[in-house]
Image 1: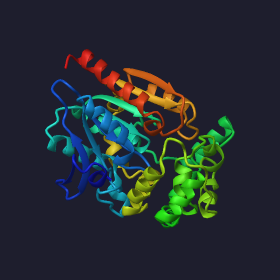
Image 2: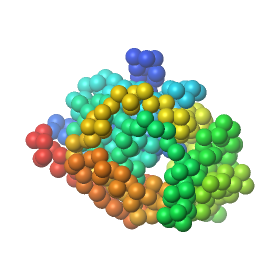
Image 3: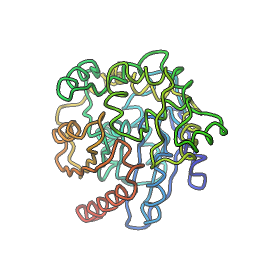
Image 4: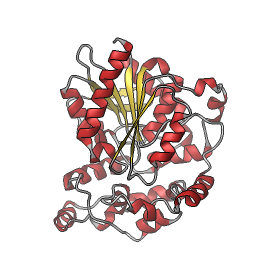
Length: 354
């Protein structure tokens, strides 16, 4: 929630198609790169807080939007509004509005999916790419076949990885998730003292688990996420999230609800970008930009092995770093991630002569 989480550097801009985006922006010092930080689900610009403060303190620029459907940005109810091509155009307009020549694009989770399309449609805006947890996703004319992915991953790994998509693409999913996130401040304080999240925080507890292994049994298998949420299950709060940070996160997600965020999943299932992607040649989908892929050995949904193989097929200049943590790299290992971002930016400057 850019406007309240980063009040001194936040802006609200109306774009040419009437869509309003909230974002945090701190300009780069001379000769320093600007990072475009794109969050995933269920998240917002707030999940980049450790990077915003650390990178800007080193003189790097940061441009951090609440993506469509989240925080202080507009949240259309229509699935068609969540076209990757349309959202890529939005990013390009924001970059131009701030007078930034080029950015280093950084995506996490769904932010990586958007970054994949942004670098295809607006390559001129980018000097380099960094994918975290989720690698490059080539634009396709085919809908995302979640049933095939679940069957294949169950066969190969012993559990399905994307079973939660079956819940997230149901019409009633937003209402279910909204009824199981957030709690009164008094209840939160009591639960925090006990080391647990309050019962109505089952969504947050599942999304941000203390033990990454929980996703093998409660997130990936078909029906498991819905069973967890409907039964109001929670687990211990991870050490890398304070009670206050959980409160802020839930306030962010409660502001607009889950209809917009879940539309990202529905748009992929329906492949609303089919016509746009059909206009691309096979060569158009290959990327020749310096690229860093950061994966985790304890991410049991967006698995490191799958991300490595999928990204290497399309990216020519690829460097891969594997860290020992779960899915939420920017929260679990913020100092290490910041070190990698800063180092890669310096490498890119040397390579390009900027």
